[in-house]
Length: 180
Image (cartoon, rainbow, N blue to C red; front, side):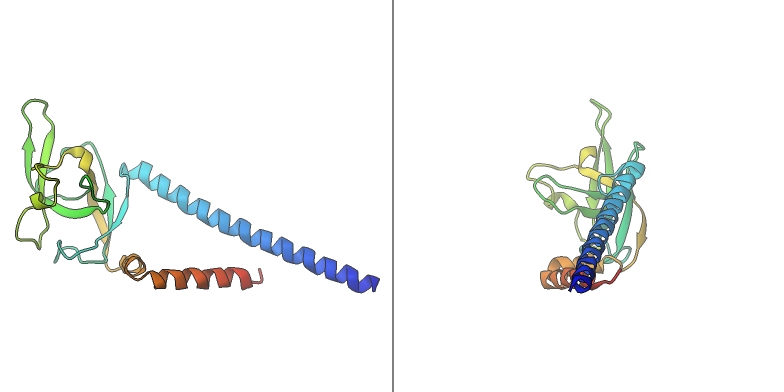
């Protein structure tokens, strides 16, 4: 019995070590992802350096599901640039083109008017009541590159939460059953 009992204790110890090792690995993966995200924020100057196009308002240039890479600099915003902005009271960023730039004479700040390439009118209907222009603080960044179709993963998981839960379940199952 002594030999069997010692063997069982040894196996339990190995299982605990394996589980702790897996948990540490998962923690390092999550920490690495967060560090990469924060590093991108510092490098690009944008609060959200990567966004997914959620609508067809910028077609044919950008389609729903494309991923945009953003950068925010102190350079003045110019007509024709594609910007991502947040409107007060709405959580979802909007990707549209600058169609008009207005420099205020009193303080030299630049206000912009945007429009989706596929939309018939400018975006004033998206802005809060009484707001005619976007100020610099509304703009999250300028589009500097894109990956087509890669953002569909995010869209599907947002629109169909069951898919997200299935993926999380599969990953948890793989984590629990992995031998290493």
